[in-house]
Length: 287
Image (cartoon, rainbow, N blue to C red; front, side, top):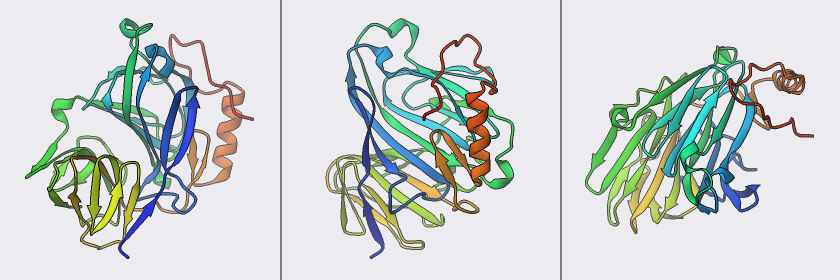
């Protein structure tokens, strides 16, 4: 078999707000540099601020949120203040340590709101784990889009189908999100060492194997991996070069060595991360 199906777990982040966690799962910890893949929504919130995430730290990774619906205001400890809307990319590199929050826009707080999107973490190579934290915003007009008959996919990060995202990745990366019309076929990029397909909506056959909505399918290296939409579908294709060794993941920390995570835990417990200007709240270190 060239295709392996993986069933995401379900996690409730707050009352009424759950996610489907495709990575990590018991049988697969990463795909290429991707160590975390969450699909949230679509969810109708009684008030937009229900989706707020208070300040919290990261190390050893880059994060990106891709929205289909909604709007989030990102703030971080390097001074960024940037809304993200559907079609835009906010690429945050934690490196040796960053703190950020995600909140509903001020003008939409108190009113009902919908939210739907993907949040992923990309592990950094060992050589970049101590890099200075940074943040890059890419407006929708600058995100390259691959189009073929019945297919339209934004190249969110890395390269695919001859196009390259302006996002500054640290290792070979594949991350594309878009749509396939019923009956359309498209081969996944064959020049990436590891590849996966996550079906957000609809149904796709991958090399003849049906992949239902909310399911992750990984592909053997070198396999042709042709996607065929059996109904109108929305998909994410991701992967790339595997990381240079296993990664430990604890809470919001990713590291090649457990000692890095223990040091980050102590820094957060002792309030030694750089703060976010204008924020007074924080998520405490879990027990």
